[in-house]
Length: 189
Image: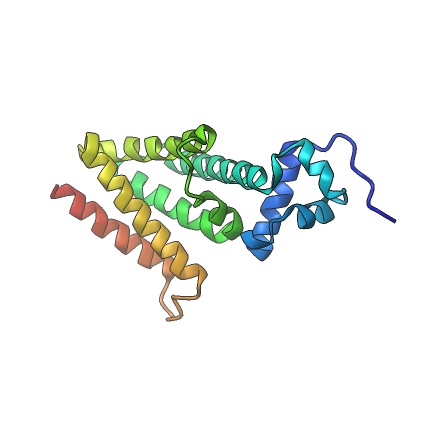
């Protein structure tokens, strides 16, 4: 007996299920067949919502970027300066830990033609630039600092996900020390 389609299946529900698949099994397992099975629908039903697997992965990247942005905004509320930078850095690392597959989806290199993905990523860059304003970095220098911060956070997250921190040291303390060093370095720019 084939699965029965769920009436009224909405894109947010589908993306949440796709995110769960990615978090549990990695992005390589986010296929239309696997997602349809999880949702108890037939794979062709997903074409009503997405332009095939590339369309699903694009929407999942946007979903992940928006979720990451919201977590970073929450972390930035009520703090500024060093504390804000530490707070959003910890939120970024926490996001990558809690949603490893969805985090992987956010790393999708956006096609310059994919405006939705570009816009979702740009919100995170703008938030980061705002947090860095207290360090008096402007223009290209602020964007270089955002790239540096993202590189640190992504590198840390990627190494942690691959089991790179086996020593009995507090990894959160390591993040804090690295971000404090980054802050001190920015003050010399």
